[in-house]
Image (cartoon, rainbow, N blue to C red; front, side, top):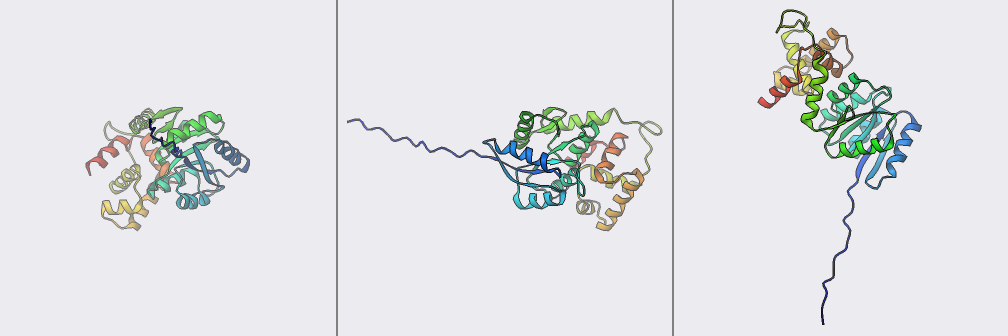
Length: 247
């Protein structure tokens, strides 16, 4: 009598993308949540209406992807993104904006976001972008990018905006030598504590230098200072990357 081996037909559970949705407009936020919950490969862990609440939930829930509005009262999306990167949390950020501007996309990338979309995007594009971001890719300028592609895109965005203020090779800038060192560290996304350790100066001294850089540039935060300096050719992403690899 023939004997047949019993096959194990147990299904392997689908690994879902865990998500946090952040927006201060309840109707829009709920609409995004409703769209995501219809997808078999997505799991919405929670939602937040402010940057402060978002940061608390990110640390508590550790979602794989945060879908977050850039423009919010209090801590905005760029600031939250920077804090997530600074704290080295295993979370990727997709920023949404109601004001789709090329410069804001650069700000988003420099802050550490993995993707940037306009809020009027259709559901299919939103879902596709979330899946790309969850898979470790970057989405900017309606393109799916690798990390190297992203660096090249950022360089291309800033290259045309650079201009010299004095003789070639020595553009004018209003910063001291130490402030330039701090600025280069800021380009690399280093925290004040990391900068203090690298430059062998106190944490308070770093804070003073950062404050001075912001004041001289007439900007409100570190991200704005970085894009301001890159656009004027005072620092470059390539130089920062070379310095980081040499250490």
